[in-house]
Image (tube, rainbow, N blue to C red; front, side, top):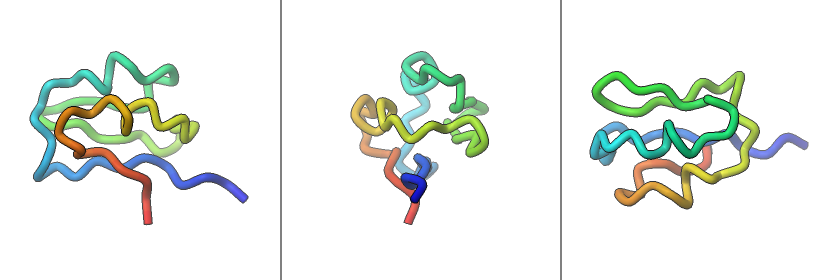
Length: 60
């Protein structure tokens, strides 16, 4: 069974773009707010652990 992908709650995103830099698969892009490119996400959750605003979580 595949692990859930990461997702960004844009209402919480501070726009710091730190998650873009920390993602080993370049699965997060940024235009005013961060967003996850699902096809690239390997569910490592580095972004979830990094996000200072708690804006990134696992998909439901």
